[in-house]
Image (tube, rainbow, N blue to C red; front, side, top):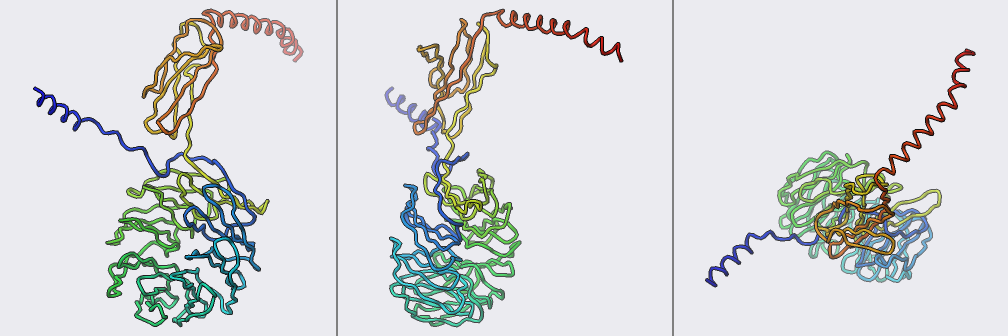
Length: 472
């Protein structure tokens, strides 16, 4: 008998519906919860190192913020305007200004060294193992010691180097306007190259034994690093305009025809694509099972990484000026107000909200059926409780449950407050609405008096109207 009961319990447990886990990551709808203002317009990307955020502005400032404490830790002023975002390294950051002067700062914002480069810098900076790399208009890739800014070596390619390099093991990999991908040793010696036939202007990305990059003739490539041979290539609808980002199965990037693509990174198959409201050069951002895309518009788009379906939207008060950044539990976006000459880093988080709506407008009548509906957002499997207050007295009229509606049959006239409490174990909210109950017949008497007043008005106005008609 006990065995039978045990087996029955196991079967019940197997068929019992499992409660899904509490959602994590970014949850829509979202709303502004905080903002940090700073002087100038952001230029390039926000860089992140744990909870610290780094970015530059076009008026020559570098800012460092404590992202979670929402405050500026320090700022640094250069001699000229910046044209790019900072490059983060192991012990500091490096950036260059409009005059091609490099600045290397420690993580407290103190200048360690600066160095003038005589030829125009044409790529973003990258640091790897204490060496800073960047490309020049003259077709050279430079390697500098990050400690002192001293040149270690330079390699001459067949055209301007506009794409920042990538790194694999002991090799430095970069693309060039001459349509080739170059593989160099850590000492700057050529170890091989691959011809794509068209210029490469966006930084390639390395993962495991594969290299991913796009070319100016709208092809996107995957190379095997072992033999430096092509695994696959695919013709896109436009030229790749942003550095690809990846998760376990997929890679994502923008193209110049304003489209966000999602590809299977092993086969190159297009899994889905979505048009954007405007052109973008901003880095994409993954937030759990969602991908965030900002463009030169007010619209921030969010898509499900599996299906590509819209997973939420946010409309900023002004055009977005940088990449979106997921800093759990906040989503960060940047705008710029030209009238004030001020940028603003906006903190967004999920909207936790309850709206309590009566099905009949106040006043109601004694004995009537009056319904109330609680509409929620930002809750997971919410529990809802209704109560009614009269003066100092409060009574729960519908205990905590999954039901978001309440039907009330008031028994006496008076001024009441109907309220609702909503919670899900992590979030909670409460809202109240006033509601008046009148005796049966009270409204009819008032209506009758109102009707009499209208009739009286008509009588008073009648002679005037007749006079006007007669005179006409």
